[in-house]
Amino acid sequence: MLKILVTGATGNVGQEVLRLLLSHDCDVCAAVRNPNSAKHLLDSNIKSVPFDFTNPDTFYHAFLQVNKIFLVRPPALANIRLQIAPALDAAKLAGVEHIVFLSILGAERNRFLPHSKIEHYIKQLGIKATFLRCSFFMQNLNTTHREDIKTRGELLLPAGNGKTSFIDIRDIAAVAVRTLIEDGHQSRAYALTGKKALTYYEVADIFTSVLGKPIRYNPSLVKFVQQMHSSGLSINFILVMVAIYTTARLGLAGNITSDTEQLLNRLPLTMRQYVEDYRHFWL
Image (tube, rainbow, N blue to C red; front, side, top):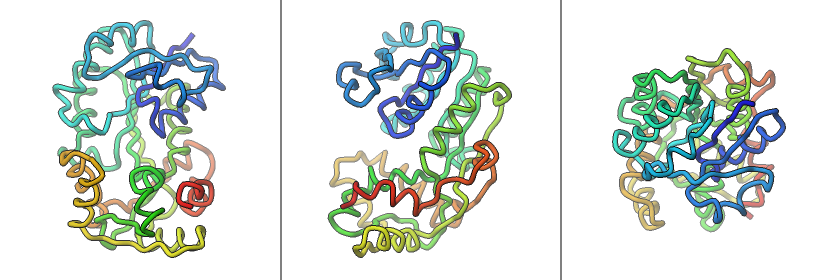
């Protein structure tokens, strides 16, 4: 039976990938740093195994008899050579046949991004891979930016007036599962976007309409850095976020592709559908 290891298992995308994989005939395992503390986040039917990118002692058992990996880079790990590459080396040594990597839109053009370095390293290793180059996750708005929206009625992001082709992580997970379960996706890269590109002013208007309270977009870079730093995020992580939002400000994040629609045989979920489904996070 096909054995699939899901990293980032307690994150938004990872949890949804695990949920969808349960309905398929495969052996699914969640890679988590602490299985006991992760229990409340995972379905009771999901097996877990201790795994930490920065702890080589966890590699052998995590990759044992694994055929495929859904790979998610932990946001805090930016030094790919030291913090990610050793795990990928161990995966190859263990005989992993296919990696589906949660990458970012434009990774092939921006070598500054950690995702780009991971793609490059996987290619160097020679493991067959599928790169899911995703646009900005809608669900970042109910995680990273939740408090700004909920308590201050503010969408604080340094993206200027640029448009972004937002995608719902439920669509990303559905694509990920197809690429893991089906043949024919190896050595492919998919650019996953929504159907429509929006400015954050337009996103704020949708929030205002659905939530019934005013939500204002604030594109201040200085205030963004101050707010993220005061919330406890590291400077390195904040700089990666700034780089991502800069692509939007420069008009480079609004590209729309048909990959999501073609892979799912339906239209991608819209921003309004997302805000309606998740509205309880901001009320």
